[in-house]
Image 1: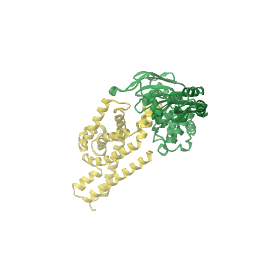
Image 2 (image 1 turned 90 degrees about the horizontal axis):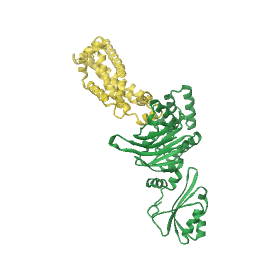
Image 3 (image 1 turned 45 degrees about the vertical axis):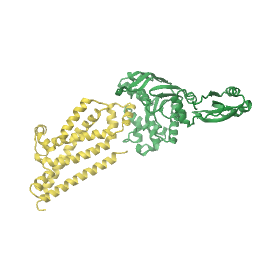
Image 4 (image 1 turned 60 degrees about the vertical axis):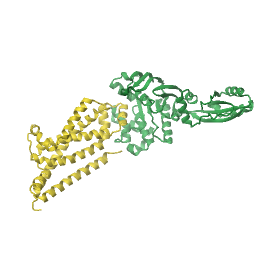
Length: 217
Length: 332
């Protein structure tokens, strides 16, 4: 284990967690409403609008089909405009969000589709406004699915952060590539991969626990 | 309380008419049943009352309001005066029993203290006070429907709509829920519209009934009349299903008649009396003795032979028994 610089590993872990935390919060803030709108404008739903739904759906599909490495580079001008730099942890967050939010939005849309239509009808029959139906019935009923979607998204973000090394953002994945792969320091590679595995495992466990607590089906 | 005036509903897709020219009226304080096979348009009909569906022709007037003419706020106000319960209960799985019942009150923006007091009162009424903090998934079907009823009553409606409310329940639970619905009708003066495919439900709780077939009302009237003397094929089929009565067309010799006893006459020994007086013999081909809500009734299909058959029929009629001649093949 002679190659391992533990302070560098600690820094890399911190960078990964910062990227993950920052981009996850923004992904939820942007992706959740996007998913709700995708659902509500869908066929047969309360705000059914073919044009709006088609346009949003296309946008989501375009963003989801661009490989993340390409997104990182293509977005550089926008990233600079947003956070003042395209480098380091701050420079990585905008592309991470743009990569993950459409993915999360699709998963949210799917979770909302799982909600029993009868419950939505009953809410209207009780005199609910649309806003009340969405906030008071639709989202609470879909909450287990939405949290499961957030878990899957967070884990996808972990692997995205590994690529953020391209813009000098650091993090565990970057360490694994630069030292473990490019310099044949297998021990560094093993340590970083184990740390990433632990992170993914913890995220999944926390997600599953929360889903179980909010699900009363 | 509720009037359908030549109401039609055609779904845009394929131009399929769910309802055509339906006219009926429901009086305040009565239990009105709509019976029909699946696809007859019952579900559309009941949803026109609280504006979940809009008619494509005619008018639906509820409590003085033309439903289609109401704005968003007017419709919300109407829906607070018209409660609804569902076949699959449609409770929010993410909320406790108490929160489900409180939901319509919160939607209406009532103050928290009132919501709490009213919720407790409603749970008491449906006998679920002990289950307030449970989630719907922890309840039986009958308990879920009780929550549905408590929720539907939360905003103090004048009308209760029951959408196949007992179709997902076992017979014993069905009876309990129907008793509860009957009590609400009596104690709160609630006007009730229920849709069902089971004649038994109609027989137990309804005052009047409309029979729906392919989007049209083929027969309507007091339950006793429709049940004992169905005029349409559809009504006859539902009555037969409810009684499991075999068609009496394995004809014996003699005149086949159907006797209908109602009220007190049901318990009198009329048959023996008439047989002795007129020398007529009878073979019983089919029969039923039951209750329509509180009224006992009996209906017997007989083959009369020997003696003076005409005198026997006159004698039955004099005793207040209705006599119908059964044409071969018509069955019961």
